[in-house]
Length: 107
Length: 394
Image 1 (spheres, chains in turn orange, blue):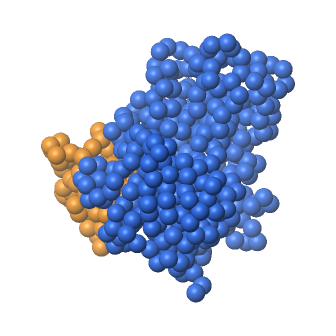
Image 2 (cartoon, rainbow over the protein chains, first blue to last red):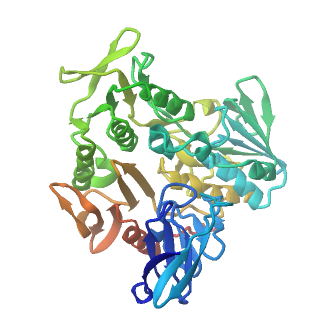
C-alpha cells in the first residue's frame, strides 16, 4: 500500500503520478471516483497522468491512445495492450494505491 | 468492389487495411510491402530502438490475432513496379500481377541519399534494416559521428548517438535547422537543445562530399573544412515513392496528387500517408498517416469523395531528454508568445515551456517542450477552432 497524497489535494478532473517502478497514475474523475493505472502508455513512452481525462477514459498526450480507467483496456488505437489497474483507497483522508501483483502485467 | 489492393505495408497501409475491414469491406484484401517485415512503427527507430531501450517486439504495429482478423493476403518483400492506366492491375517486381477493383497507394517515402553513400559507415535511417545496421555499428565502441541534416531525424539520431557515448557533430546547410517547421525564433530555441547533449551544431554550410575509399573517413564541408568521421548518418529528408506509378495516368508531383479526400484522378484509387499530396499538402507526419486512411477508405468504398481530411497537423520529437510537440498551421510573420514556462539562455529551461503562435489575435499553432498537459489543452482548443473533418460539398 503506497500513500499518494491527501484526498483534498487531488481535485476532481485531476491526476497525480506516483514514482513507483513502474510509475502509477492516480485519477479523480469529474464524478469524484478514484482510479489508478500504470502511468506509461503501452504504445510508446508517455505519461498517462499528463493525459486528457474525460469520464472514465484517459487519452494519452502523445498519440491519443485511450484507456478505460476501470479496466485498463485500450479503447482505441494505437495502443493494443492494456495497462494494469490498481485498487485505490482513502484512509484517514490519505489516498493509497494497492499495487496489483506483477502477474498478468501488461508492462 | 471484390478486390482491394493496399500497396505499402507500413503505418498508413495497415491503417487502411483496418479501415477497409471495419467499414465493411469483406472482399479479397491484398497487402503488398517492399520490406520483408510485418508493419512496424518507425518513430522509435531513431530513439529508443537505437539506444537499445526498445526491442523489435516493441515496434510491431500488429499481432497474430489482428492479422488473422484482417484476413488479408500479405505479399511482403515484393515491390510494386507498376499500375496500369485504368488502375486495375498492380504489377510486382517478381513479374506477378494483381487484378484489383480498388487500390490504396501507401508506398511512403525513401530517405534521400548523398553521392558516395555506398562507403562503409554511411547510413540513412528510415527502415528497420537501416536502424539495425546503425545500431550494430554504434555498439562497437566510441565513434566519431557526423549527422548530416539537423531536422527531426537528424537531431533525434544525434541525441541517441550522444546518449550512447559517441562524439557527435550535426551539419545543417541552412543557417538554422527546423525553420520551416517552427519558424526562426523557436527553431533557434530547439536547436539549442543540442548543447544538452554536448553535440556540436555546424550551420550554414553544405556538404561538398564524403571522404574515404572503402570506409568513410570524413565529411568535406562546402566551406573547405573536413570533419573526421567513422560513422555518417544522412538525414536530409525523404522523397515520396512514386516512381512505380510513372506509367499510370495518375498525376505525380512530389507525391500522388489527391483531392481533400485522398482520392486521385481515378475514383477507385486513393493515396494515404507520406506518398500522398492531399489537397496540395504532403505531410510526413505519423498522425496524418493514421488519420487519412479512415477518410480515404470511406471515399474509396463510396466511389466518390464524400469526406475530406481536415485534421490539424501534429508532430512530436524526443531529443536530449526533451519532448517537443507542435500542432497547427503556422505562417511566417506569426508572433510567438511564451504562454507558460520560460527560456534560459536561449534554450528551453528546466520544466519546459508552452509557446503560442498568433496572428490577428487568433492562435494559429502551439509548440511545447516538456509541457504535455497544457499542450494537449491548447491543441484541443485549436481543433475546436474549426478544423474538424468536414463533409465534402455534394
